[in-house]
Length: 563
Image (cartoon, rainbow, N blue to C red; front, top):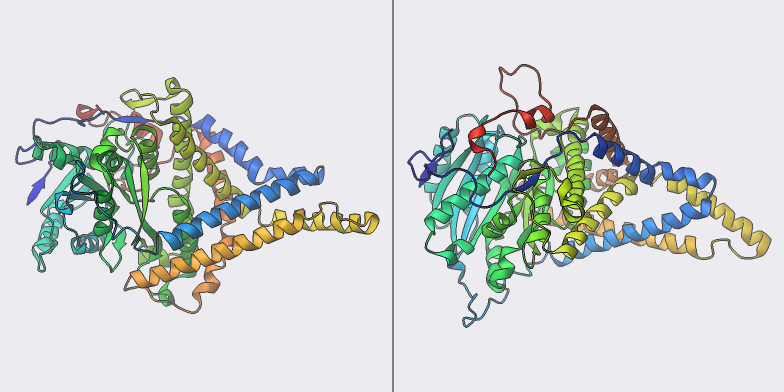
């Protein structure tokens, strides 16, 4: 039950020793010299988020009406967040879904499903890996579970880790044990960037090759393989029903829809501690992230769906940062009838206790995580825009991109991406300036009322106040429900009376997030330097640091150059 891959890319027992490269086409791109992209974005978002308030000095009417439109956008985001939190992420709505009738040719039994559970690990603590393996083993399901551990070249003591995982798997109870345990050894290839994105691609290629060999004469079995990718710093809830939910959805839809499915559980962010032991800095960051992860139309960090579907979509790009969003977006562009199913099961992204206690936690959070997310976000926008409107401008990694199949869905995904980016920049930054704009507008209203017996803006300001109040109430309700779900889903969490007050600080503190990202756009734009994913740390004997531009052009492992 232990099949492993050697450093030269083959399986040690010769199982796939003659196989080289991915079985399907890779569709990816790269931005090795992103100066124009970063500086244009800096100018655009600086104006939209900050400089637009200069308009208030000459045309107060414009900025007041603009503020009303922003408030409506906030209300829409709050309504979507509240709806998904209350109607999907806190209700077992799919667990009893009606399966397809036996007469339907697409009918399958849950026992026909294979769950390929992939864990990506670099140099994280071994304790985290073993805890996640135990959580995955405890997941109840009717189908078969196969575990793939995606290790990096820098991962220490891989054989020892795999032996401990096999010992956990052989331990009682064995009712839901893994049918097979495998691992990959990721060695970065030319034009791929280090980190989760390229390791995720490696695992997808290995899984595709492995299962195609296993089910070479059984297309039905291969089409019912669900690949779910986990980061090593995740914990699963105490209900252990994630795979049961996935199976219920899978058996209730037809074969074409299954290829385009994306599963989105209830993702939360927290330290693995009771609230009384959590630091204020971590609580504020977690509160902000919990709302952001539920507003997005895709699951952050957790990527789950048909193995056949993601391979048909050209894999997750190994040369771009935002592999979780791109897995969702490429399905929208290329796979027939893509669907996202929001599940009730909860997954927690865990902050390591040592990191939480660090006095530089906020700076590390901004510099190592927030910066990479926002720059990866920008890559997604440019990648999809060029793919839809000017494919010839893409700098392809792998095969040349085909035309977008689902144009309107791709445009919808791109629009939602821009909308979330606008809200992420404008919402926190507009909090203080709009207060003064509102004061000036009310002053104009009162002056007009005294002179002309009617307010200058009519009921517009009252309308905006009602919308803003409703938005705040919806955000508070959603945040409270997320916290309650969090406390009920994980045994190690425990409420403390100081938590609500700390969570209320999330909005004013989040003012720093977009400002820091604007500075990052400017800094990396001036230096013409992309951002490196920070997962794989350099070796101890490495001298200095290397920019991602240099890494992209370095001749690393040319034997496996993309396709």
